[in-house]
Image (tube, rainbow, N blue to C red; front, side):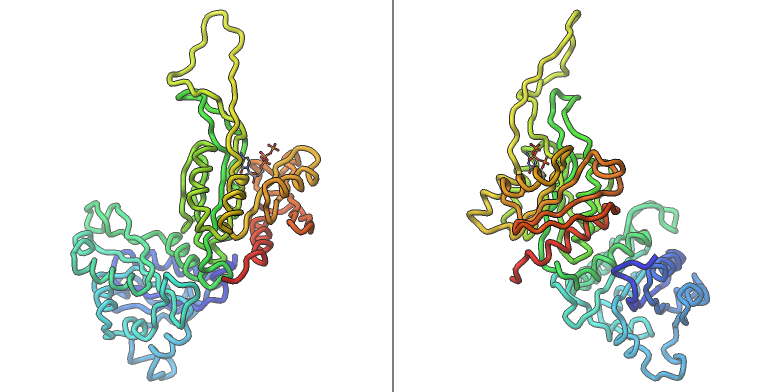
Length: 421
Ligand code: CTP
């Protein structure tokens, strides 16, 4: 299925010599499936591990090795390829080619093409005339640990290249250690992250809260709710794909954090509140998707609570937790940050009236109203039916749709709320 970031992108996939070259075939296939146009350039050594025909068949385009026998007699294939590339991936990247790239050598078609392809600075939004480079080193662990190799990697990363891996594990030599090429899925995720830097949220920070907080009763028991965190993580992914730097302050989750999103784990509402307030001053957009417990056991017992013979009930006194979005509103009134704040209203009755009241009480720009009793929608479900209520009184009722699409719609509604810097 075409991917919204990779679709139509012209990818130069450099493959160098190493046993991991076989995994590059899978990466090539994944890129093509995502809608990218892939031009494979191999070194002579790579072609000893995997035949160029493999890549040609997967990409539907010739896989090139030789500087001097370009198709159509093109005398400067490296320059032409460099000029028509949106993204560079080198996977696997051998110690030898890494050293050449760091030094600016151009002794084969791959190194010559890459020398003619400036690296886009990773720290800046947009590409600034450069092209994102994704490097996936793979080599024997001693070669990787060598200070010379490390210095070459550092030099390229300092110029803006994104390094993916290497991971630890079993190497071709049979030894265990660092040097395994990152998995193709991870390289693809890094490529998407780099391409997103052209998006409308590039240079912006987005903070999302997610999951149901846990309020301890004793060391082994806690009060919580049915929130899965799926909606929050979908929002984080949507913001990341628009180019934002995204962090998620989250209660314990059963689902993994999306690639490229910073995880800020917390447990209780108070901890979530502290973590959010600490970051609010540098956050452009805060989205409160967490299901925050409004009350916590007033005293958490230090030891496991024991029942006594004949005991028929246990009374637990609850104390109020802070209202996180309320605290943020107070801070924002002083500082002007975050620039935009979005809340959720999970309701079981009077959806729109309750949501509108929360929009005002929490001084939000936008609230996402969500009837959690609707079958197939809300807590734990993969779909959601929501209505967007804006501070200016506008309302937008959306049909039931996957949470990922709801997230896209919420982010699309947030973009016009942000003033240009
Ligand atoms: N929220 C918050 N802090 C709380 C409770 C909720 O920041 N202590 C946020 C939620 O993340 C959500 C919004 O406020 O974005 C509304 O949450 P919801 O649970 O629907 O409302 P409450 O404010 O808790 O109101 P009530 O439970 O009385 O309906």
